[in-house]
Length: 294
Image 1 (cartoon, rainbow, N blue to C red):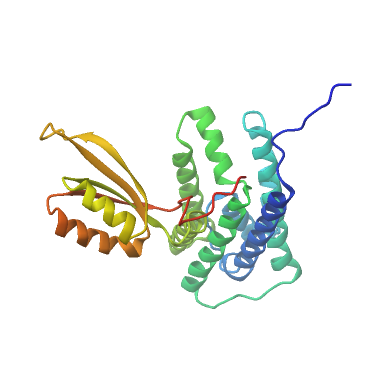
Image 2 (image 1 turned 45 degrees about the horizontal axis):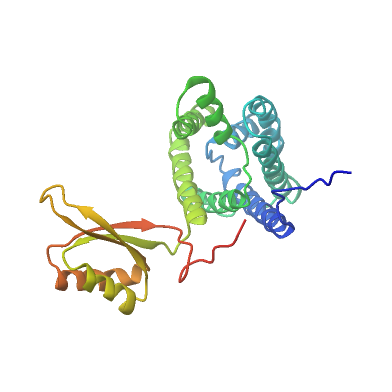
């Protein structure tokens, strides 16, 4: 009998970590909706924003409406998106929706504040933190991202543009539903803050700096990087387009607190050096994050 080997199995530890991230993120999202977004009718975009407007009009639970609205979209997306993506979206959407209704409908928590601006700020913070954790758990909550993928499939627009246009239309529509000009303005605040927090959760706070150096003193600068900063790097052969001469480019990644020290040394050693500095949000390797296999 032929032995069947199962490959690409996800380790149990990874599944448990992902599940913990999804549940934690869903709880944080539920708290944000219950304390800040739903009581003040703050629309963050996506299907959750439509659900808040429907809740205002007919008093249906927000989480339940999110599930109802997502079902046909997921059925459509199942035709051209991967099964894994549809499944993880379903899990994330159900989990987050249940916690939203648990805190808002069952526990009936009161408002977290009486100030609408504070509600927009802290609602956006909790929403972004929760969504970021769900995304790190390799799941999604449906809504705008799935709609963006569908628009990309049938209309040819980019996914990012599809999501942005969808959120803009939904948030703008809240002004008509609530009959308040300020409603979409607060919604844009929630969207902006939540988006920035998602980026921070996914990319990290302690970003490093990638430095690209074109210099006539590569040996001295390389020695400084290796022995003074205790970092490594790469030296690449290069040719100056302007001077049409051969040289070397040094590429290194350092902690941001080391950047001023490196710049000062380069200025002293080679004032004519050409230096490019970029933000680098994730670095795997010695001296930085450990490179764990997925």
